[in-house]
Length: 177
Image (tube, rainbow, N blue to C red; front, side, top):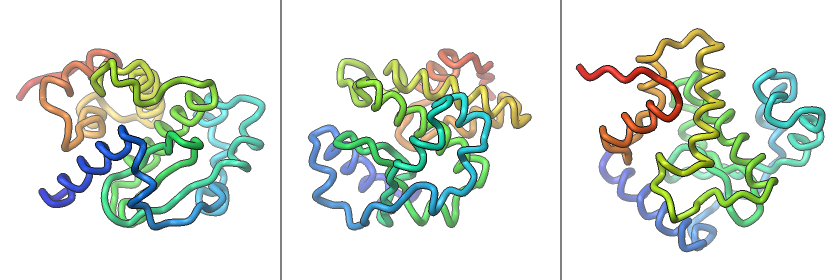
């Protein structure tokens, strides 16, 4: 992400915290299953939603955005937000893991959990730790080693210290260079 995208992303995060993000979105909502085929058959997804997987994914909406960011869950109604450019240019394994991560958040939203609990920093937020733990489990099932998982966990807005904390919370051995 270039510096301008990073600034725009930080603005979106701030607007999201203030529940104003819908003011800058341009997309309309689509059916998740029209764009993300066969996810109802993915064992990791079935592990999230259980017997209701088909029903939940069948009702899930996705909104594509083109400005910045990766993926997220809209806190107003629990639909998935996806940067269309990220889908075109991002690493396919990272995209897959992000979908798994965000589907965990969708389940949390359905359970009434506060996805953006301001009492916690991002890497210490219980909903993030839970979603990352599940995502790391899937990454390991795919055969990713700890270093590759660290690369996946690292984001532009996360300090090295925060990355180390998150790695520790999700059971990844963090080795400094």
